[in-house]
Image (tube, rainbow, N blue to C red; front, side, top):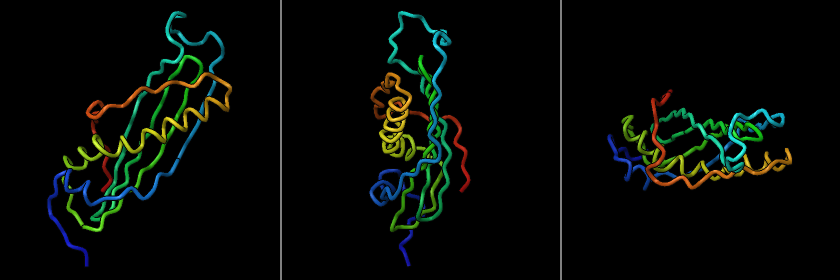
Length: 150
């Protein structure tokens, strides 16, 4: 039987979880017809608008966080959906605020390189300029409402 901590904080949770999988659920890219983008011709073509949505589910010893990312670039639109899976050797009764902190401080940082790679690969396949997704700094990513299905 696993030991149980009833209400961990995010530090305790992080110290006891391992990333055990990253699964791509959707990767797509669609080139825009030339001249379709409404942005200024003087705007840096490497710029892109990035939108995240998040869904999480968790049990006593596992957390899954799904990220859906839409990137609107002057040359194309990209969509990536992936799930990061974490397990723990400790069972928890997680409060929603701890899950939120975990997603904002840990899970997004683990997922972002995979999102960047998927978009870069798709742009290369479309023979388009690779969108530059800037550095995601700790604390810059903040959740709106979290869709939880625990």
